[in-house]
Image (cartoon, rainbow, N blue to C red; front, side, top):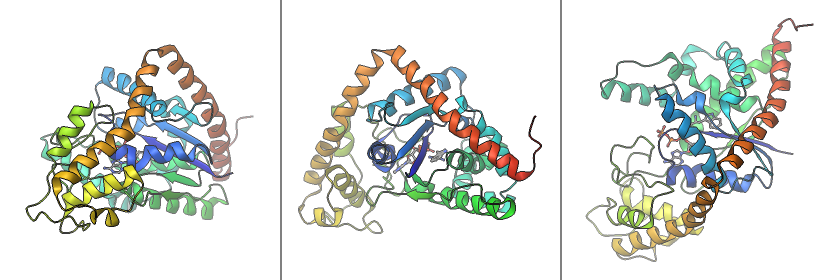
Length: 332
Ligand code: ATP
Ligand code: LTN
């Protein structure tokens, strides 16, 4: 059976891009594959976090994973730091990946530059070595398939390269994973700056749509979405990023081809209104499930504890296989 693994950082507010690019696919995959999903709190600390906030966000992220339809009876839901084998394997992989490979990662270049721009000189070494930890997250579960948004493509390629290098140096140890990137909405763009991806750390509060936002606020954000002055509805990201972004979102929410959808519209106003309605219909059941779950915090604790146990059992086996292959003396 295909094994699936993916993760989400417990930082900021989970947005429509996370949902359409990744989480929705996770919910579908759980029924077809043996799936593992985690809140990657160890990745979150590559930039400084407030401890109380990190704790609260980690719980909130786990509640969100259940709210988007991940069933703890069907898949394994866990918190990354509850399975310490991830950090152990990460070190083995840091010694397998090269400095040059890490230096080429665009996410590192973007994020380290952003830190500098915001006046924060401090760029942690963890921000640089982050892809080795991400490779560990994936390889430790022998995952074949990794459902992610388009921005993670490069990290997935690196993970494969590292796994291949390890296998050729030390013998077949890791499964080579593939990225599963959706055809539509793999890169949802910011509604105010449609040439930037929608992000948890967006500049403008109007640019990102949180999945738990109230419906009036969602409608308002789509109404105010930046388009262009030509008033021609056409799917072309190069010359019409704002309009194309709306068409992609509408396409993903209604399961239709954005290029064909464009033919149905003559006005931006109608496109914006229909996109908002379609997004609200997709998000409403998610919002409802979350309020039910937050009413029963003990249940969430049980889910998290069971997930750590299930994930830990699988991770322990892979790490000892990797250590054995590398030549570590096993404790007798
Ligand atoms: P940040 O932008 O602050 O780094 P993020 O919004 O990218 O955070 P992550 O936790 O890093 O959030 O990503 C979780 C998943 O959501 C990943 O699979 C990522 O590829 C996907 N994702 C993130 N942003 C988008 C987007 N705008 N469109 C589609 N998928 C996205
Ligand atoms: N790097 C990813 C988050 C992430 C992840 C993973 C995704 C960490 N470990 C393993 C898939 C599989 C991000 O920034 N979105």
